[in-house]
Amino acid sequence: MLAIWGLITILGMIVAIASRRVSPLIALFLFPVIACLMAGFGLKTAQFALSGLVSIAPVVAMFLFAILFFGVLTDAGTIEPFLKILLRRIGKNPVLIVPGTALLALLLHLDGSGAVVFLVAIPTLLPLYQELGMDRRILACAVSLAAGVNFLPWTGPTIRAASALHTTPLALFKPLIPVQIVGLVYVFAVAVYLGHKESRRIGQTNSMPIPTSTIAIIARPGSRVLFACNLILAAAVLGLVISGKVEPAIVFMLGTTLALLLNFGSVREQSKAIDRHAKAALSMSAILCSAGVFTGILKGSGMLAAMAKASIAHIPPGFAPHIPLVLGLVAMPLSLLFDPDSFYFGILPVLAAAVQSFGLPAASVAEAALLGQMTTGFPVSPLTPATFLVTGLSEIELSTHQRFAGPFLLGASVVMTIAAVLFHVIPL
Image (cartoon, rainbow, N blue to C red):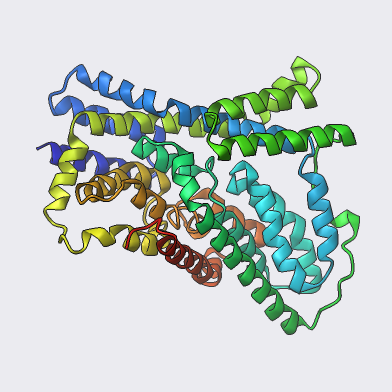
């Protein structure tokens, strides 16, 4: 019976979010609470919910302060010099412009926000693409590839996967570092290929510099000393986070406070800087808290274990070891069917519990999912608003973007899945 209640909870949550009648925050909280009460757990429901909140608190704090940290550094102009140099270097040669587009998107994606990448990179480079007669689909494809493959520990899918399995984002991300490097090589290989192809099409190979007026990056001016201090701070924070020697949430909290003190001299300026990024940070943090309640109730009530047990009965023992591999190969297309909250908080925990029963690590399915589900898949998924930013800013139709960029994004997912097998991240 618990398996049925768990299934009702997950399906209800997925349908509610997909129908857009309620927000993920409401669906993730309300459905498990109602199901747990109806299953007869009474006031124990609150205990289960609280245990989920406690387990997810470090992840919420890390996400919240990571967004604020990178937002403050961006406001301070830390990234601006690199972007200006890049845009001047690529000139008006398509062979350089397309890889430069991908590199620009990677730099902009340091804060983990795909929307920021698209809002800055596409308007900045669109006039250049139009001036040279370059295909706007290539612009949309290049920024999508770079943002999709760049799944950092503080990006949404990684945070969700870690929250669903009650582990740390860094624990999932570290084994994937060599896999992501392979993915980035693929991104730039595709960018070079598209650049050469476009160069031949339009017959343009000169490398004239881009006028300064074309460079539309806006940031807070600062001295060279301040810029150097921000750069050192960013390197120190990222180094500590990746090293794993200090809890990431504490590192980002410290980094945020130091960045605010360095760049904004008054309480008023510091408050404004926080306010500029608070909406994005708090919105996702609230959803993560609801997700903690969701997984806490499903786990504490035994619904998750019951669903996993029921699933195991229908999985041939010979197929079980291949579940992570299959998931990695289909993860990108699954982005067209499941929004990130439904998949990572509804589907992933069941898959993880199922593979654990066959002796496989739960992390293997999470890492497989991160190779495509709302990473390489999000820029073409109609379930995410960022997709419509790409198409709207690039002035192309969604179907056109999906047909052009989709195969390249799927290719990135497949290449990384193969790399994950070779690096023994995904069992074969």
